[in-house]
Image 1 (cartoon, helix red, strand yellow):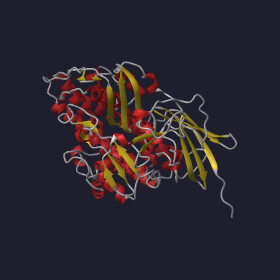
Image 2 (cartoon, rainbow, N blue to C red):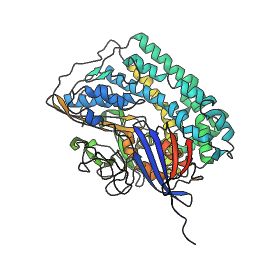
Image 3 (tube, rainbow, N blue to C red):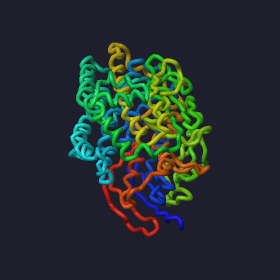
Image 4 (tube, rainbow, N blue to C red):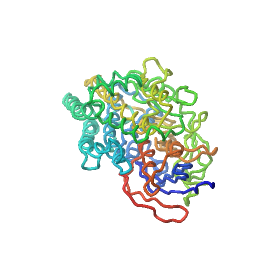
Length: 533
């Protein structure tokens, strides 16, 4: 019996915040056997910032993203802090952390309802016993939970606006601190906004229980017991997501590389007052790390191991360089060649561990490790699930994001509680030449900025975003990128409407905002035109 023919599908575009994402997959016997992810939009912030004033990054880089600009601003500020050897008062660190946290928790319902759960209302799943309820809750614009979730997502960034005057694209974080001095009225309003978010969405709809009860879950067995404990738990958004995901098989594919990275985030207000590149790992509340799922080992992540491979990316420069040594020289003709160059994203690698996945799953697997400082946050749940469920999947990747909401909320509370309103918020720095590095965890994963200042101007500015880690092309050794690898083994029920590809891409929080066309690459025939979000 002859082998089934290979069918190539070009899905273009699958949007993301940083630009348009195209995906090509080979399908044989109804399963993806090969995949390529193509970042189709060149932004060029590294080129834009060259020869500018060192503080230009504070204004320009938050525009890199319309939904996580606070994370870019955080990185830009800390990069200059380390380059200029500033002193940052505790209040300022708390205010920076609060801005980033509130931006992150607004992204939870926006991604969940506006991008991810819509696919659960797809006709492919009409046979599921959960389908009718999924349509009732998550159908775009008309779903009950969709409407509340998307609406309430705007509340947390009201706190950000209290600090920065606006959201998005505020630049209130600056070297030496922040350009705000919140009043008691501001703090009181912020508390009320958090309370409203928790009492009207997070507890009754997201988790179906109090945060205190949810925080008691420490293991896979605890979670299963919680799920069966009360109907409110099983019928919460988290509970229904879990049950339906298993029913439609999202625990069976989307594994990926099995190697993970986090820069760690939320610097301690008591441990990072005089920031240095070398001192950051020991001073962040949420610890950094690299987790290798195959060997089940953890270690701290150090920026010196970062490399950018450009063999399959549209740049004319040496490959395998550290960002401090890059020049960002884009090629003029970006012809798509799956065997050659096919993406604007570089293949980001760890010098010892190769390609790594970034995102909430990575953060939570790393939070389960025993590495790092004894005072740093730990959480064993997702690592226990990973081990007992046989590794990662679309289900576990999205669940990690939903689970993370509780701890982000608690850290927002802590920032408000620990702020001392009469203490300084800013200490004026002395500008000088030098190299700096600022890192954080955006809601989508590991984000960092490198800056080199020479002669009072930016000589080199480099950004590696979470999507660069995840959507990058093959590296020089032909190791696939995280999303490329996660697509391998994905079942495709209907080549004219490959919703399963969307499940995998969206589990990495690619922001899908456009109409998607599926083509047979051999004939150029359009198979279907359909909405994905």
